[in-house]
Length: 145
Length: 445
Image (cartoon, rainbow over all chains, first blue to last red; front, side):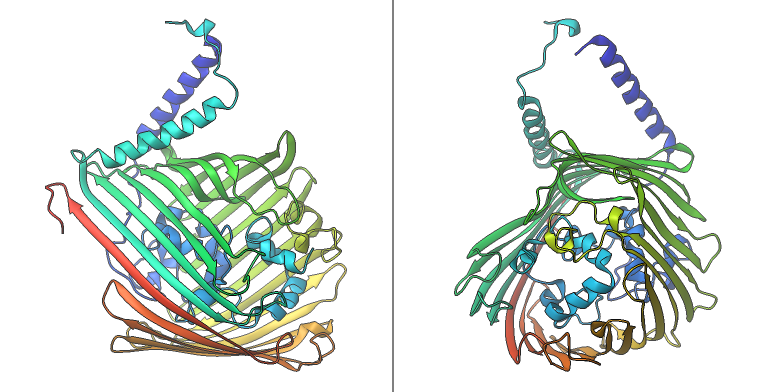
C-alpha cells in the first residue's frame, strides 16, 4: 500500500473519531425500562416522538418499515428473532402458521394463502417483492418455473 | 521491517478471509475473556420444536410429517461504561419423516442471522459483523458483512454497510457484493430525514444501484408522517414513492392516509424468482400502480378499537380496484383479545370481486392460552376459482404454560378452498426458553 493512500485513511479515521467524540448523544436504552405486554400504544407513557408508535393503529404495520431505520428503538423491546419471524432468508412455514396461538398479531398470509396469493399478486405484486423478490422464494419454483 | 512503500499485498482471497476470521476470533475472545470489564453477562436461548402433520399443498407432497427445530441464542456482555458486546444467532432445521414437504429435499436448514454486535453507550454507535438484516433507507438487505452506524454532531447520523447479499436463487443468479449507506439528520422533536444509496455487483457487472430519501416527520403532537422514495440508477427511473400520514386530534381518534406509487419496470428490475420477473408475463414492465387510501380508528376505551379503511388501486394497464372495510377489535393482554373484520374488494377482474370476513379470539384461562381464528373469502364469480364459491379456514390453538421457561401446545387447521375440497392439518409445538444472568461479582442472579 502506498504511503499516499495511507494518509487519507488515517485522516478519515481521525475525522470519524473526532465526529464521534463531538456527537455527545446518549444511546437509546437497550432494554425498555418498563416491561410491556401485548400490542402496546406507546403514547400511553411517551409524549415524545415515540408516542407515534401505536402498535394497535391500523397503519402501524405499513409504517414500521421507515421506523425500522431506528432499529435500536425496536430492539429495546424486540429481539432479532422477532424480525426474522417474518423477514426470513428462507422459511418453510408462514409466520401465521408458526403463531396460530396469537391471532391478534398482524402476521402476513393468514388463512388459505395458496389461492389468495394469486389475488394479492395481481392487485399489488410490489408487496410480494419486498420479502420474496430475492429471498425466501424457493417455494415459488414449484409452479413458477 | 518493510517500509510502507515496499509493502505488497498477500495473495488474492487471503486478506478478506484472514480479516473475517481474525475479526470474529478477536470478538469472540473479547466476549469470552473480558470478565474484568463486564458488569453483567446475559445468556438467553430459545428452542421451539414443531411437528407438522397433514397433507401438503402440492401433488408431490402427499403426507406431511415434518419436524422443525428453531433455535435462537443471545449472549450479551454489558460493560461499566454502557458499552455492550453481543453474539446473536438464530436458525432452523427441518426433517421430513414422510414425503418431501418443501423444495424437493427431505432435510433442510438455514442460518437466519448470526453476528457479533458491539454497541457503545454513547452516540448510538453500533458495529455488527456477520449475517444480519440491514434496514437503512433503500436498503432492506440480509447480508454477510459489516455494518457501522453512529450519531454525528449537530443531529447528523451515518450508517455504512458492506457485504455479500444472502439471497435464494431458484431461477436467476443474484449479486455477490453489496455496499451502501445512509446519512440522516434528526431533530428529535420534529423529524428525521435520510438520504441513502445502495450499490451491488454480480461479479464485475453492475447489478443494483438505488438511491433514495426517507423521512419521519412529527412536527406537532399528533401528526406523524413517514415515507420514502427510491430511484433506480440503472433503469433511470423512480421505483417507488410510499408515504403515510396520521393525525391524532384526540387520544381516542386517529385519522390516516397513504399513497403508494410503483413503476414496475424500475421496481421489479432485479429478482431471483420467475414469479416476479418480466420473463413469464405475470409482471408487465409497462405497468404503473398508484394506490391511495385512508381511514379512521376510534378507541373509546384503552382496550376497544373500531376502525374503517379504504384503498383505491389505479393502474395504467390493468383495471382499477377498491378495497374497503372495517374492524372491531378488543385487546386486553391479561384477559382477552378478539376482533371481527369485514372487507370488500371491488375490482374490474373476476378475481378481484369478493367479500372477506374474519373473526378471532384469544383468551387465557389459568396457565392455558386458547385461540380461535375464522377466515372466509366469498367470491362473486367462480370463474377464476375452480368453480368454488368461497375459501374458508378455521384454526384452533391451545398452549399450556408449564412454567416461565416451558410451554407446549398444538393447533388444528381446517380449510375448504378453490385448491382443496377439505384439508386438515395439525401442528404440535414445544417451546423452551433459557436465561441466565451473571453479575460482575460472580454471583448468578
